[in-house]
Length: 364
Ligand code: SF4
Image 1 (tube, protein in one colour):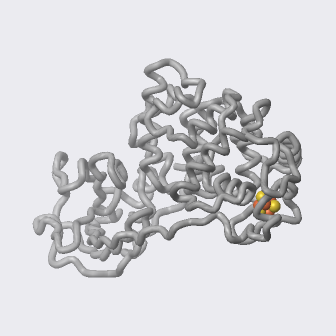
Image 2 (cartoon, helix red, strand yellow):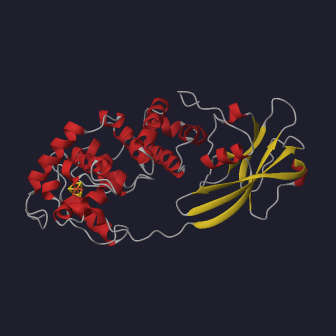
Image 3 (cartoon, protein in one colour):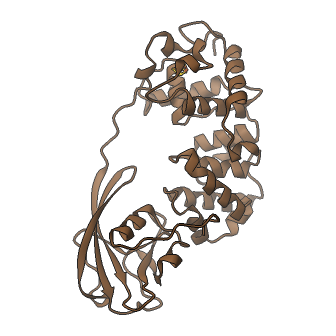
């Protein structure tokens, strides 16, 4: 890395380290995962923070750590319990991978203590490996998440697409400029700057500790960066969901647990069939009634779900399942809230007039 950081030539790397680290240590938000050096706890927080807001994550993180305080405890827990603790946080693939990763760590006896070693754990990608290695083990490696990509694109005037070659440049830069004496704080300082000062549409350059080093600010181009090629439109998909209730009180609802480890795998929901499919006639009385539509947008899919309701004709047999499910159950809303239930399932139930009670402080 050259001594001059930017076309402005106004700051050197040590000056930037001092400015950003000093600012971070004074101004950082108090967050529970910043009070620990435990690599497992940092790993959990980094996985939860992907695609999820900080204030949403805090209570989930605290409950999860209380329930599964070590990788060994998580490894021993059934996946059903892990998904139930994750319920409401979304992107359940993260929970399944975290669970698989904990099992791999428990098998080897300890978490690897380098970025390269951490990459061998299922579910730990380059960003999480960089975060755990630098924060818990003080390895001098960089990392790039959305916030860091934005900050680096502006500091160094990276004009390539940040979903392609620009990202690769940012990743190389992140490693090249990491503060070797305080890599964990440095990486967190870049993330914090992106989250609180160098924000996507309204960067507060006047309040920025890196302003002197910033090429985009010098060029008056902060708001033009990062360059992001348009995302592909999500694919449209449609389905039908059946909310089937018992006739007797207390009223119970039929739910199925999705089979496999793909989308929604392991989660409980009113049974779905693909558009045009039908539910077994023997299960419900009469013709199911359409009561509403639900739209749910995932990263690459836009799901339109027609919600139908019916009375159950009979209690399903103990080993009975439906295509795509590995278990069925009849539950009251109070029982269902203790299971792993996706946001989509909650929307479907609400469209049918079934409201789930709020979880208590312990997440039950
Ligand atoms: Fe971002 Fe402005 Fe700071 Fe540059 S000076 S890093 S654009 S907030």
